[in-house]
Image (cartoon, rainbow, N blue to C red; front, side, top):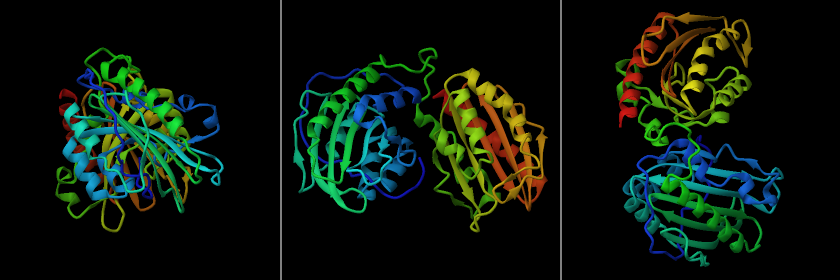
Length: 401
């Protein structure tokens, strides 16, 4: 998810708990975390015409949650860090008619380092003075729900929430409305559906990922693969983080960002190859030019990652001579790729006043990506290859944990 306007509420209070402990698996694959959130069909026929909100929906980091989706970012950041939330996925839908009474409906599932941390975060949820509790007892290991008057966009409306913890998973159901319609019963029923999904995910029963047991890759691992600024080297001292490009980026978002030259083709390729998500960190010179980005794409399986790598250079070479926005791509050339991982490929694009080099390195179903833009072609190639080696070492380390 990207950086956009702040929205959504900080979680608040309402009570109920059951006594049965939930079993915990050691790693929840990113595919399975995504599947734990309710799908559009789970929400009911009233929401069949709604569209997925790619701005607020998708995988998210703790920083994104605190910075972009909390009324109290500093407190939220501290709570997330203290409790050890690893990653989360939010499935959010909005009406096509922006004047509709309902503003948004969502489910959010977060995975924590352990059940103690998830319980700590659950307990940090504070009730506002305008909140009214309603019953969701019997769900999960802990559960609470409430209705409150709050900002829902540019006006005051009603936010209805339910939060359920099961083991180290924490799920939230939310509906924001402009009117006073009571949706407590609807939210409670969705919370029951979500709790069942959490139960199956926590026990390992919910398993969309088809790989062998023990080969799961949690979304949190992707975050540790991208190179932080200090590891880029002295050539990038003084660079600043690009908050728009530094984040989890699901397929639609990654295909539409400024580092993508052909969004439609990129999105189709992601979907054909079974890309699940990706995480990247990007930095740029203070004037906004010569950006550098490193990170990793996660695919459903090795075969999809292998095909994505195999077709990459061919797809980019088709861009030569074309115009993307205001930029004309003067040439696209192969670059001798390093011998790394399960295969690597590199290409150099020449655009007016700059040279961009992209290096991909595959390890299983993970494809590391390094992008360097410089005014000098030789410098761009040398730095991209050097950073690709560093990125591959970091990726290898993350996959071994």
